[in-house]
Length: 104
Image (tube, rainbow, N blue to C red):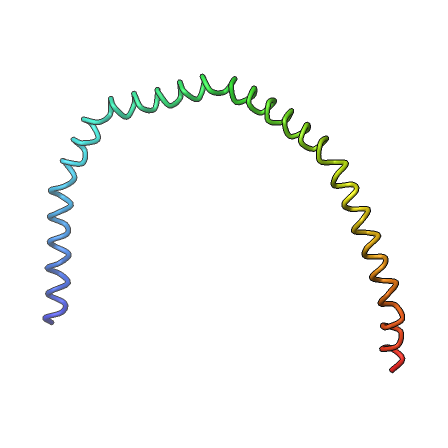
């Protein structure tokens, strides 16, 4: 009974607190509405201003990445050829060992 009464009391306290807070919350929302609207408008204006710059930035970045790729391509091609040759050498050296192990 005591636990049930305690839960009922807590429920009552919370209901009273929410009833007291609700008008204040509504007042705060109403009081801050102009600031929130201005902030939303400012953000949207910034988005509109930055959109053309975003497209330009994308083009500049793409150009640079293509230049980097063109500069690195010969190096990477040479590296890949050397690695393939090395792997072929390793495979050739290991082939007799693998055959021997399989036979055993």
